[in-house]
Length: 572
Ligand code: ARG
Image 1 (tube, rainbow, N blue to C red):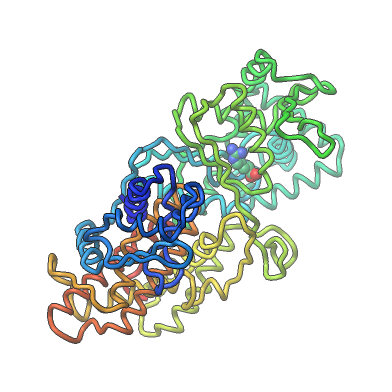
Image 2 (cartoon, protein in one colour):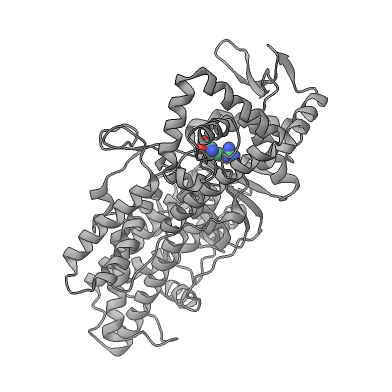
């Protein structure tokens, strides 16, 4: 049970004994240390319901509140808040308990099967920054859910089907590269651009491209073989990026749009049989009353075009059904750009109406905002082009290398390269993950690579500092008593005890920034403790106690950053 759950349970029980069995405890971390460590806000609402004086009810709740051995101080504040200060002995015991398991494992009470739809680039082009967020937010969520003991199934829903592939095939043949596509596709982005130019300028080329689409969909062996090579080459580009990013995604996670192609006629037939489709200008559409426009007309959701072709929406309906029926998911997270919000809300609604997903399966669009340049506009190259992800990551490492070299002239080049990789990639990921995912954010090299503030380098640095302390003092001996006496020790032990709550909120709300905010608190409290409580001076018992707090801090930073896909270093 997490600390927050424990306190909520106890306050809830006391509320019940005080005559408010239906009231919520609403325990939160206190805003200021003067208020204690936690504050319960549920009394005022309950008092209103019961028509009682809130401060009197608060006193009754406190009389029933059993925090023996947990809290050292419980008091009423303001109109009826209950302030709770945790007991130093309790925090010391929690720390000792947590130190027994260096990986700090936390298990969910009810393990689920969770599908995480992440990354999902379009394979006709090279991966660009637009897919960075989906890849790293999805990876962080998948790691966190796995850590909690859920059965996580990663699904890389790559765009590997559709009209662009007809265009690429036509251009591959026209440019005489049919025999050696790997070479022609080395710069996939450039190849795509040239094909698009041909498509736009030459009607005959465009017709040929369309013919190839028909052939591809009809299962023509020659076109299929070329298409497979496109997909193969493009996927290996992606894999290089995943490897560079340190993201846990491989071929076995790829379940692209093409995989659902055979299921699409059945999806449309089933929707029709259930009376959910209407013919509208030759297309098959669903009218969704749940989504009315400003004139009160229901939204039109197209599942089959006039020419019989299927769409992104049809594929997603098939994928939703697959995730329910075959993968047996209890929960599916779609880590996709916020601009696709309406598509997902409508798709979820239709999938439920059609019975493709059961009522008790959670479907969540884990939406994220846009990555902006310093000018406040979507992030672009200087010439206004899309930024290739691979190039961005190289730049991150180069910049980190320059910084690290400046700070550590005595390290070998190889060592500096290793550090630069962890710092550069970590900085890019952390800058992204630390913002609330739904907001847009400004991508800025200097802020993300700063060694102060809520950044990856700051947290990584806090970790190395502890390691260097251990190099001097040795690791603490196991099972020595931990004594919490100073306010800075109390504050550090408190935040360390909150790790399971941080993991829990990331998984519940699918928001990795909770972990970042938490780790920043850990590092900040550690630095305060380090200033206020000399670790290597004083009695041996004090040293051993404080070294253990250092060790738990290091374990927490390492595990927490690991859940975000960020490495720690022993030196930097
Ligand atoms: N390939 C799509 C894009 O780049 C994202 C796919 C997201 N996943 C999904 N199930 N629709 O916009």
